[in-house]
Length: 152
Image (cartoon, one colour):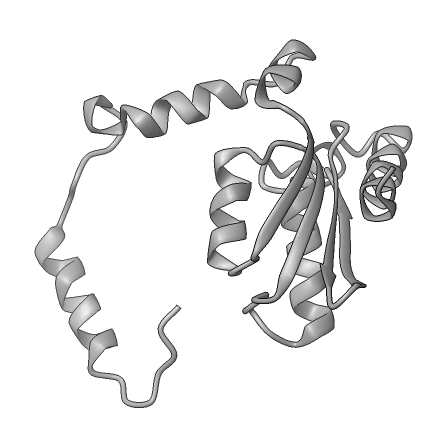
């Protein structure tokens, strides 16, 4: 077994044994060294965004003093959900190794498939409604005019 996946599994065990959330743990590695670990803490924090990958990203960014995790790899116990995959992309993580598939995750009661389907059909959704675009475009214009900003 890969040592980093073993660490992700142990991180997930810590979370489920403490009642923090589902069986999801993640480890972020850069240059062969662990720079962040996390497990699902949705129940512990009453926060649906506290997935294992997100918690590991938070720790890695804090430990490295950057929001850019280029050169890092992520090891996670489950195929990342769309929210986590988006965070992984925003963080510029180079590679993701996952243990269980989306089908495996669905089999134990999680609804990741629903979110994948929503994203594929979001144009048909009644949930998203554009509102006050002109006012928001003015806000964007203000941002564009800031000198020496980092775009991220």
